Image (cartoon, one colour):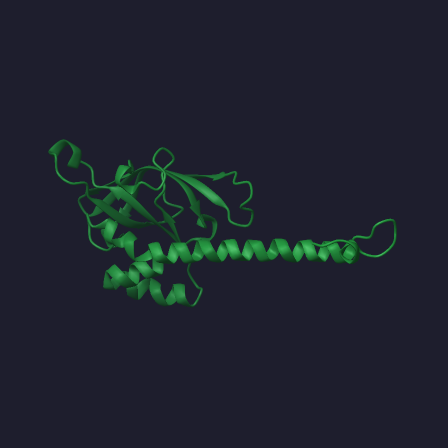
Length: 192
């Protein structure tokens, strides 16, 4: 998903740095958009990305974020602070953040029924990132998200199909192995 966003909105430096590495499997990125209090409603996002000279400062909480344990960077969506006071439209910025950055903490979330895909909540407390970590353009983070919404749906469908196949395979294997009263396997006696 992040590769699709980078390929669509850049910038060119980020494309050159990440796309080939992602395509070859050398690098993995994670995405942090969802927040505990607002879910997927990005327009109500409370996480902020504030420019401070030649750096960005991130603050907020992101929940249900996959793949942080193996990611080299996390694509974080945050609100540009100040628009509420000024009465202007909300602006958002997307930033590639080091998952080991000072001020970033993470906690694994229990996700019954989604084994194999670890989910995390991350807390960002004055996490710093360089300006060249912006994906797309500053204040235009929603344009970064739109290119990968179709990819997310396809990935979710693939996860569901894969999980269903794994369940059917396990059920059939069990039906071939388990016997009733030491006789034939249950699969020979019952429909599975």
